[in-house]
Image (cartoon, rainbow, N blue to C red; front, side, top):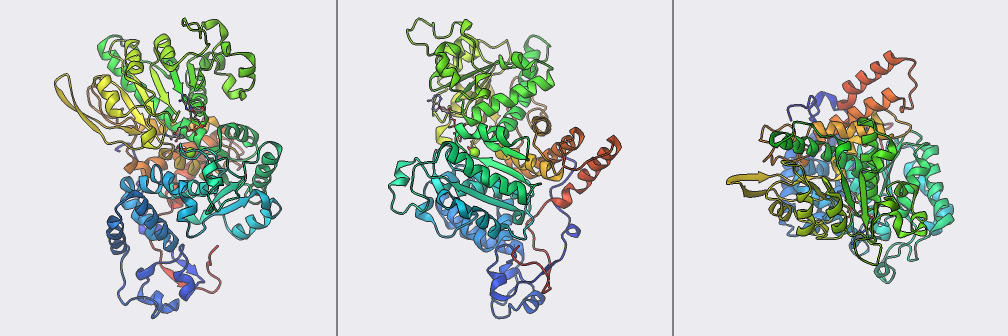
Length: 618
Ligand SMILES: NC(=O)C1=CN([C@@H]2O[C@H](COP(=O)(O)OP(=O)(O)OC[C@H]3O[C@@H](n4cnc5c(N)ncnc54)[C@H](O)[C@@H]3O)[C@@H](O)[C@H]2O)C=CC1
Ligand SMILES: CC(=O)C(=O)O
Ligand SMILES: [Mg+2]
């Protein structure tokens, strides 16, 4: 991490004393302000806490040690998830401080994969509501409900889901609130956003999940999903409330179904700072990962044969699973090729082969099939004159294996939820088509871990240690013998959580009116520069360092990403702030760099002073 100039540790002089108006049990019951046994003797006196706490005053370190001890006794990831949820309900500082101290170990408990399980059983483990539930039958009450929760609050970030495509496990109805809250937690933990300035929302527009519809304990609206104009009106009503009351907030869309995700992003991205994580966050982290993988493969190839360096636009990309994530990755890579390699959009589109349930997306499948697609998807349909579907079979389907054999991709990405789809035959066919020395870039990104298109272990064995791999959920590193050498391969976790907190924080720092592709590319470039693999001295032929920074470094890395995104937003005019000339812009950029760390929220207890006009819950 030598490249990092800013530490994520905020010095104590940047933590101001807070004036607080809550007292007694109300203060202890406020997760935002509660310190539990860490209230000092003076604070206990000033806030009417005498007799409400045991005698001894603990430090935050001691509280974390105690909480970690309790957590360790929970023997399954789900029990740990429930324990942490209850800690969050009691004391935010302790919760975030505990998570920050055990970031790599606990992120999978509060996020993917365990959160998926918690969401799936939401109605059965429900104890306490959290966030804003906007239910379709109560559409008339939407503004009132929104204002009740937000009145007087400063809000920078709103995370919203309609829960149709949760974390690879599909439609989860009202339980989807769990993904909005988990994504908000990651914004705080990794991006440094003040948790009191974020709002997690679920739009309960029904569910098509039959088991939820038949579950007597289901706590959501137990009807089929609303579609069409009614759905659009409901979502629009919500977006207009956000625009009216929080015009400078970032609106983050999460886990919408594929038919709505792109459409909604298209509809709102010119009028508000909206961001779809499954499309743009996944696109940006994948772009960073591929940039660093191309560097490594290119160096390996150069040392074996040709010294020519390869670029993004020189690759052949096969993407398996053309839903929100797969299409988002294609769009992001295409835009980066257009911007970095100065290639025409139509030419850049031709670098991609998208494969879904019906096989390769190609025009030979018929006009009706193509016309039904969104315009983003249509751009990637292969033309009819490439002879697809004529591999000696009657049907027009070109399978993943057909495509890999014919195209010889250099990059293979999976976002299909189809476990094991990258078979040995597919991977060996890919290997056969590579230039001498080049290393295949293979990214099975489906979550949760059990749905991965191929395990890293298999990929490394089938490619004799050549594959450059990244997965969507964490996997242990793999030790193996390659050409008589003991090698360790660290598997990069290519999850949007490694970049979206920084992308979002950058947009907030710059007070962006919109989130542009160029801002996302700026963030991805910064992330790629911090990749252990490209900063490693290892022989590129055997380089086993991770393609992306370790999750444990995510807070520091995301601060760097945020600064790059904010700089880009200011330079290109995407900030809502008007600058008279370039000099003013450069001054604003200097201020962002100097002040970014001050804006980072860190989980430590500020000193409190009682003031009847001080802070309350809002
Ligand atoms: N690593 C990361 O950061 C992210 C990973 N993901 C993961 O990617 C996967 C897909 O997520 P989304 O794109 O949001 O879902 P989605 O439902 O929008 O897309 C999935 C696509 O895969 C296709 N598909 C399903 N089975 C298939 C099969 N057997 N063969 C070929 N195609 C098949 C579907 O038709 C659909 O187009 C999930 O596992 C999700 O958890 C999603 C977002 C971010
Ligand atoms: C990581 C993520 O956003 C997903 O799996 O949906
Ligand atoms: Mg998602």
